[in-house]
Image (cartoon, rainbow, N blue to C red; front, side, top):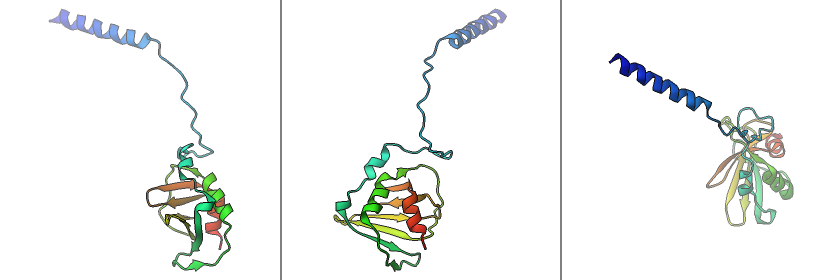
Length: 146
């Protein structure tokens, strides 16, 4: 019995040594675009799916926390450009609302609701099918402007 145990140990140790000495493909992992964002990964490329055309925008309205319409002249071109150029971020965000809420209504009656949670560069945008955590200082500033 003693000889079987020692032969088995020798075979296992030999296998481990051979496995440890085999060459491996050591290609470096691709760089993750963090944009000084240590908490999460910026989903580069995924943001093209959320782009909208300025000609498809019916209206853009701002609402306060009591859901009162805020009369403010908003430039469609600026808002759409800021939305399209924003970057989707997968970091966590606080689920509270502060500042204004922006509702973009498209000509096909779809809506995109953009809310602030107090961050000066990030907002949350929601449509009927998706919710995006966006990095957009322009939109965040508009929603936090009193």
